[in-house]
Every structure is written in C-alpha cells, then in structure tokens.
Image (cartoon, rainbow, N blue to C red; front, top):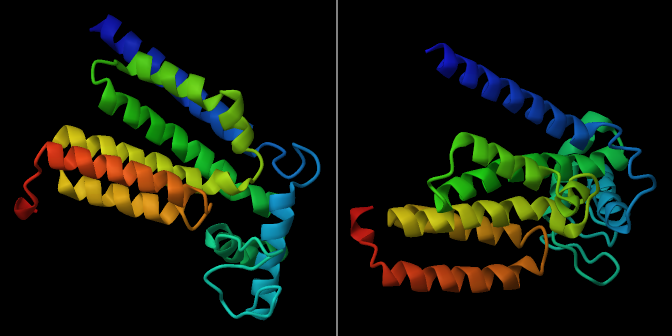
Length: 219
C-alpha cells in the first residue's frame, strides 16, 4: 500500500511539474520571445484591428467570410479570434497574436497523448507521460506554440479530428466519425491548405468506416 501510494505521489508530482513547465514555457515572455513579429502575425493582426475599429476589413468589406488581404484571401478563423481578444487588450500586439498559438499548442499535447493511448492501449501512465513530454518539447511543436503561423491555431482541429477518426474506427462509432469531419472542416477556416489535407483524411476515414460497417441507425 505504501509503495502504491509512493508511486502515485511520485507520478502526480512529476505530472504537475511537467504541466507547469509546459505552460510556463509557452507563455513566459510570449510577446518578446522570439523577438520581432512574424509576417503572418502582422497581416492577420492588422485585419483584426481594422475589423475591431470599423467593423470592416482593410478593403472595406463588412464581416467577410474570407479576407482579401494582399490578394491571397486569408482564412478568417484566426482573425475573428483576434477580434474577440482585442476588447481585453485594446490594440493588436505580439501577445494577442501569439496567445491562440500558445493555447492551441498546450491543448494539442493533451490530444496527442489521448490519441497515443487510443492507438496503443497497452501504454501505461508513465509511458504516456513520456510521450507527452517528448511531443511537448519537440522543436517543431515548441516553435509553433510560441509564434503564430497560419498552420498554428488550426492544427488543434486537425489533431482533434484525427483523435475522433481513430476513435470511430476503434469503437465503431458514427458519432465520432461525424465529430472528426466537423473538426477537419473547422481547420480549413484557419489555414486554406488544410482543406486539401482533410479531404484525403476524410475520404480515407469514410472508406474505413464502410469497411467496418458501422450501423448508423443505432445513433
């Protein structure tokens, strides 16, 4: 009993420390590190500021579903998230532009661990914790969590879609497959290229769903 309590206490302690380190590493000096501001942050932030002050984008369009920008037609998701943050900050800055990426990065770690558990059910809690730590501090993920690129905020919906995709296959669930498709669809409003990626993922999942013959009527 004492050994079990000791193991649980040790695990809980390491888990709490890990969570604190992950959260701190995403938010510490977020507005200053990395220094400067990325072109995506400037472009999307400027559109959000214009929308917040005038109700129109930089081309004078009211509440557009896509933003013309410099002719590349920006996906609207992150701009409207910035818009929701602006009442709390007053004006666009690097903190505002990076908060969604930081939050998305943290939540993506949780989804990744859940997906690992779903795929490899034999993984114990220590192994899952190690998976989460490796993923959290992998250079590409850490970088995407500290600065906003078009791929940053929408990636959480790709991760969530994949989780429910695998869940649909494992649990033979049409509901989870539907949630997966919705998550994939939302990702396209954050990064246009995701629409082509999720098209392939959705088609693949549909073929697998048919293969496992889910009984839709029971839902």
